[in-house]
Length: 401
Image (cartoon, one colour):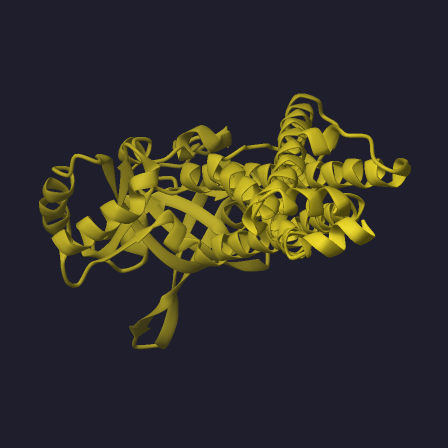
């Protein structure tokens, strides 16, 4: 501390110390702010995904008798909160001469609201079909994603045709299987991939359309704690056995999560370079200190100080500069995160991002990684100056210092 606060020759030494502290602070603040914003977007995406999907899905052909038997086993797991049957298949939606491939999902509305937030995503309509005058038996209901409906110019009350990949063979030849549905509602989950490609029908209607004879193609599972999804999925997979496949929400969106993880890692590596540059300033400051205090080092060595004692002085000074920079950087990073989260500084287009302000989420693991990474760089910056100062000969230091 005495060497750090002592008056040095000229302003250059003081400026290099300030630059070293400021550089570490800016690097740490940039790391913390950037990673927190990326965490905010990732948490927001995960919230939207788990709002439209369950935490775990067990895939496999499930007649109702087999479904109830599996349901009894799954619900005995202490981490399982609720389950729901589902049907998943592909189809072609046709209306007014326009066609689009979609993912058809059949569900039971009463059971579905226990495993996802899909019921709260309705922007218009519900599961009830509107009858037209003189109509005795209306088509079964279907709910479309808001973006899908906008792309096809379909509104609540319109009739659409679903074309199944399966075909029907008759005496006239082979024809595609088609069925009329009536749009009963529109929903917006906030996740574009779901809203632009998914359509939802009642479980019996979807099962009949896909030729499953009333069977389900999977079971949705909701957990008390989403963080336990990977461990619970392994337990359920061993319990269900062949031929069932168990996947978590992260497995079903593996490409997206892999891209987010890679992007976060690359940003960490790029921004840690700011701290690396600041660490070089610390190294230059300590080298300058060693030159200025050459006579002092020689006198201390002559009085019995060992090279290890000299090294420790330089290591501690580098540690103090790094600590001040890291502490200031964390304070500045927390302040920036609070400002971004509180004030709408950067306004996002809601039709693209489904949020109007930048989300921020500070994770403890990121703070630990930033602090440890910064300390490692600051320590490495002190290795050469400390070794150089400790290797000075006492006689030469006193003579030429």
